[in-house]
Length: 94
Image 1 (cartoon, rainbow, N blue to C red):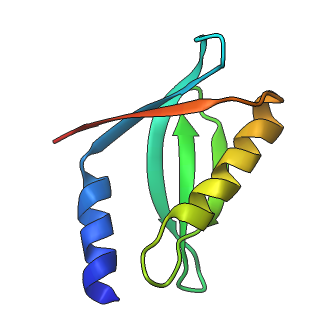
Image 2: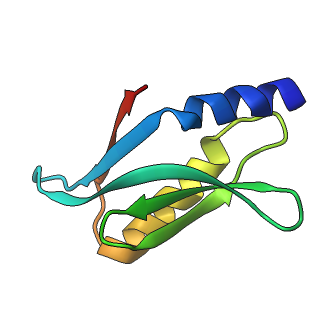
């Protein structure tokens, strides 16, 4: 478990710039994906936009799987922009 979380942290230490794009191709927001350590020891996947908005995602599974965390993140993106068919484009650089 610790090795997997260390690998995820290393992955996120790279610059993870991202864009939220509408179905029509309009860029709604630019920002970055971040892992936030909660007081209870859990790790949460969030999106911080360049405009200062924090969109909270879900908790990363114990095995490091991001599926449920990203599902919650997309539900909260829908709640923020009230649109379906959003695309998250991630650009990774070191």
